[in-house]
Length: 352
Image 1 (tube, helix red, strand yellow):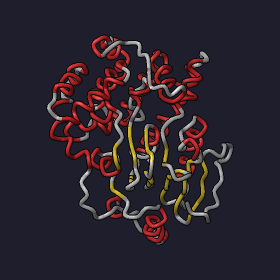
Image 2 (image 1 turned 120 degrees about the vertical axis):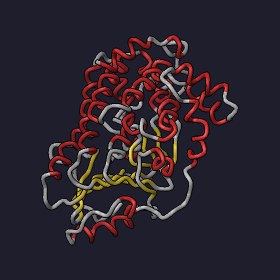
Image 3 (image 1 turned 90 degrees about the vertical axis):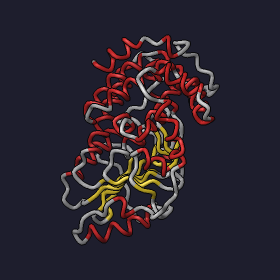
């Protein structure tokens, strides 16, 4: 991070998000490095307020978002805090977080100025929400991205199903159901990023951007800021089997095809899905299929309905416990398998 930045919190907000003006740039630094900058309700409110101010500030030509520390942009929402609210009998607190977070994601997607997301290191869950909807999305060779929510009894939210539904050959379905981690070049393949940065730090990228904007020139396209590389995304090789295995709307049938596939990677994917909450897997596939025909605002509205339902479902508290609190990795899901999940109830939630 540039030590010359005069970083400060937004008026009326805490220091978990810091801001500065850097010539023509509005700089945003998520500032919870020990938690890989996981988002809280206060952080989302701060970001909403400051981004709205900069949208009306003619001196700010573009916004740049990065994470403090060297571990990543953002590991997602602070789901342990959300679990605590649910267990304390305050599910409405969790729902307020999701409501504000999705407003933020919508603002990023519709931002009236260039918005450059520096997607270095860990970028997961809500971290993709504030970056993958941006106008300029740069990953690095250190990027490790994922939507891992099915392992905690949740689903890929923050509008990501809108993006993943458009990915080629059902790669988005693979990412959504398994929660598998993917590289920066894979993020480009999935449509969640634009280019791999040619340098390991943001300073070099901004050295290209700042003088252009200072001279009232247009923001360079994201592809111009990326590397000229022929490196193939590792997930490219999966396209030979994902299109067939993940077709359709029946999660149990998808799992059966994966398990019977002669391709080792497909059987490994089946193993990952077996570990996930059956309710979350069924919900995710149904929500993904609906998202394919919806604009982003309607996907986010669907996300809010599904998030509220998940917050009240026992798998959410249990999944967070097993994965992040006790860390025993032995969740006791409410349903024994995918076939036991009530698909009519899932559809009713999604359709509102």
